[in-house]
Image (cartoon, rainbow, N blue to C red; front, top):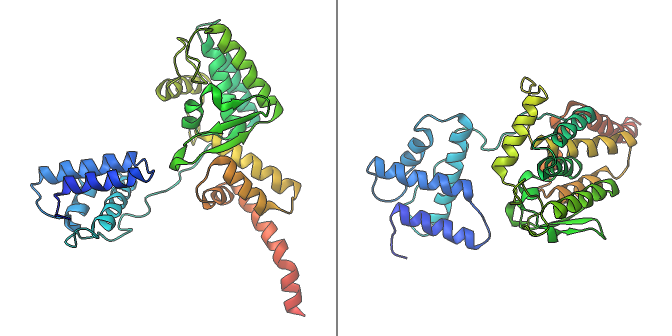
Length: 316
């Protein structure tokens, strides 16, 4: 292949990987920014380590952003070095891990009840808006869906007879089935009836509609949740509650329930939970065991109990 300039090489890299099913939204934005930076400093020729490291730090971003920039440019460099041996691959880990989980807010049952009650009172009264947000927040709380997954749902993705949602082409291009408990299924069916009554001739594809009968957007969902959070006086909570924390709360509630009941097949259950949540790597599910003090204590106690017979045998 003829040697390409940096901009063309990055376009080739992004196009090649996207054809394989990778979305590369954030990485694509970062690499296009790298091209702009290279043009600004009048860089010519292949990618160099100096260019990559300078770009990762200018203008001075937060440490996590530096780490993610470095990871993005390393992925490109490793790929492109096979086509252009002049490409320099910057060293890994200079700015720490590119993926660091911050503290999460775990909703109590009282907080969830208050959130749903506040959503049901959203203005304007008698519109679909309060019904939509109560159904949406309730679904997130009882299934652990990502907000993006819930907003992408189409009406045809809901199978009321089997009480199963089909999540299509979610994060990392994965699809999966999500069965609902009877109470959750009843709530979703009730929302469907209200939706059909409010907009009998409206948009019939998107599952969640706004008050105008259009698909509910991520921006509107985020703004409304922030308004509800402020209304409930949660602004000062540390950490501040987020929409995504409904997913964390669901996962932790499942794990705590299994540990408290002393179920023997906990590892099998965790694998099932990983599939249910759509985790690509099970370590993302095991992370909850160390992120929540009570889970860490329960897991440690279970591990110590499992080791006790082995230690007794060795002592003999």
